[in-house]
Image 1 (tube, rainbow, N blue to C red):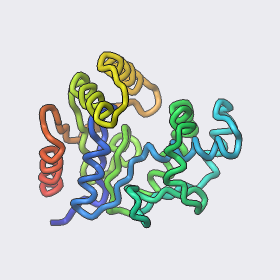
Image 2: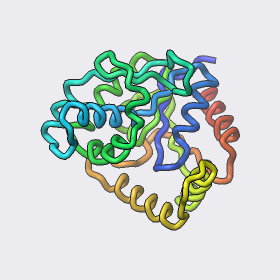
Image 3: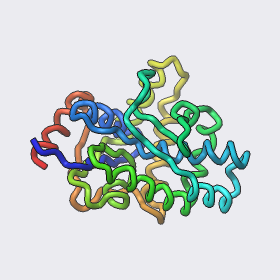
Length: 226
């Protein structure tokens, strides 16, 4: 089977993109590239070098100068990929609580998004990659050999996130999660820069009522057809 060099998976928040992308990449021997980690990397770099992220010009300029790389995991410590900034491994550092609290603001800066799109293209052009995000098939790689747009109802997505948090021992409120996802959907779909929407030639994969393994099998079937 000749596989597409680049497989793009887009979709709304909590649709299961990352889980599908990681398992699919494992099954076909590709690099799993969750593009959201680039925004985490820029946020971490801004906090380290600038001490804050509310200065849009400075953060944007920094994002255009740093070199971020994503490669297959070199350490068996649970990571799905190595993330390096200017050659330094920051795979786990970008997961800290300070980054969690500031990444949304950084990812909203237009110049940062433009800079990260260029970095995503540079990494993806190596091929053999499953890329996950919200604008991969429409903006980053409109020429991707296979574009999957993963969907599920907002109620289903809220339920999944709720049970995921409960299973981790984290207190959760379903109604709050549902409201937050609706707000995120509205923001992602309505933003001027790279709004969330399926590419014209994307294949919409509805995961409603399916197990992750069933979704993976359907995605593998799409790869065969592609």
